[in-house]
Length: 104
Image (cartoon, rainbow, N blue to C red; front, top):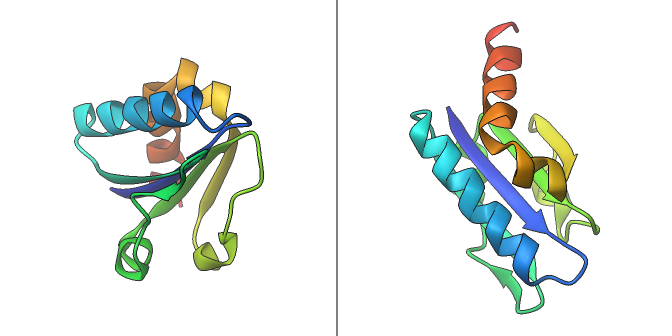
């Protein structure tokens, strides 16, 4: 599965980057490709390209604030969750997404 994700927390510091790292680790352990864009206090980092988005099977928004430039993801399957959910259970999150995509 090809996953793209955007992480963004209120302060834009710790949780944004911790969740990005946890999602990458979980996805790779489960055998998936993932690219994560962070939207933190330093602005947008690791910005997803149009190609990244086009090739994605699913988009994960893990956030507590509005996602900037969300219109880029129009037409994609989006999983929109609080950042704490991705922080506490990243592997479970990805496994649930796998199951839901396989069922369709």
